[in-house]
Amino acid sequence: MEITDIQIKKVEGEGKLKAYASLTFDDIFVVHNIRIVEGDKGLFIGMPSRKTKTGEFKDVAHPIKQEFRKKIEDSVIAAFNKMQ
Image 1 (cartoon, rainbow, N blue to C red):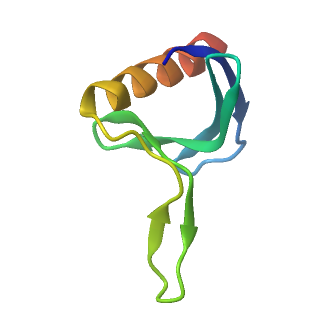
Image 2 (tube, rainbow, N blue to C red):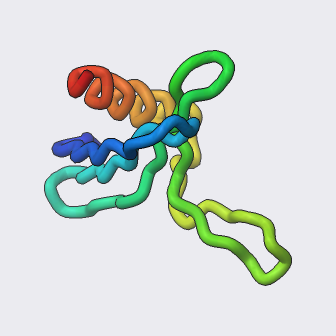
C-alpha cells in the first residue's frame, strides 16, 4: 500500500496541535483527521479517533505494523515541514 497524496491543513494558535492531515492510499482510499502534534521530543502523529461512552478515545483507523506507522509518520511530518 502506497501513500499517493497528502493534504495538510495547518491549525493557527499556540497549542500543541499544529495541523491535520488527510492521506490517500493507492489513489482509492482516504483517511482524514490525522493530527500533527508537537511533543516533548518533536512532532508526532495521532490517528483519527472518537470518544467512547466511558470518555476514553479509541482510534478509528490505525496501522497494525510499526513499520507502516513509521512510514506514515515520516511522510506526514515531511509534508508538514515542507509547508514551513
